[in-house]
Image 1 (cartoon, rainbow, N blue to C red):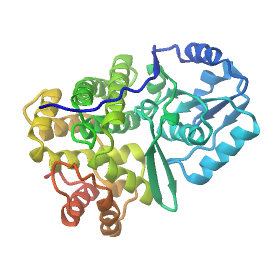
Image 2 (cartoon, helix red, strand yellow):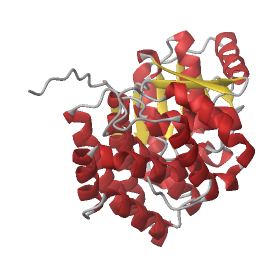
Image 3 (tube, rainbow, N blue to C red):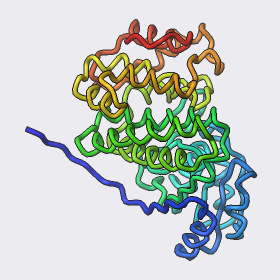
Length: 350
């Protein structure tokens, strides 16, 4: 018999291309904030927040949210009496806003400029001494998300591809993550279908808003599924690699995904069948391989700074974090083989 416990997170989502500035002003007014802190990583998006006259603009943002940078942002928020956080940027920017909210209870308005999906989750992560720690806390879930595909349309196509595959990883991992249930699996399958439709449009014409709008919708659905299902094998691997070796977030996910899917699919036939159908074929691994070929996706971790000499240590660090519920047992040997294939850029073989 089917039995599960599911919690749906409460969040306001505003989706409209070309209206980020207008929607942000309206949301800031709705919160009636006296002192707004804008956290942003790229000056190219400055027009979005200049209309709200922030009390503080904070731009000291780094991947994987180093603890020292989180403490610096928290201190700045306290000094200026901030009562509302606005973050404009990718996962690192949103992650820093979450780190501030974690200890201050300040509400967040998130304006994502990539497909990272952090804006739709109550998951936080910070890095200290080359180790990344993650957690779940209701205080870090942004109260409002403002989506505007014109912001993603300014990304280099290579980053759109990597970030979009990061979103796809949220969906795939949600099919067998520790808290997976029929609701988040349904969201994940639909997210895969939408992402598979949207990403090739971006690759073919990066300026075509249809592709970016589809991919944004897919990224949101993926993140909602992930927030409910939790971190599966894929995300445990990527979190350790990112924190320990400072690898770029999106590209690491883009490389690892095919290898985890090939590893787990034979042991999770029902999930694999649904993933395959969302890809529009009969085989999940082949469907992902076809999409990756179309997108000219990242292939090898060695291209992003991971050394071959790091692989044994990486496996040792990842192994304790592997979920007990993973559909296929994971050993030091099997994990090292997976990492070696991902490092070298070999085709996923399971």
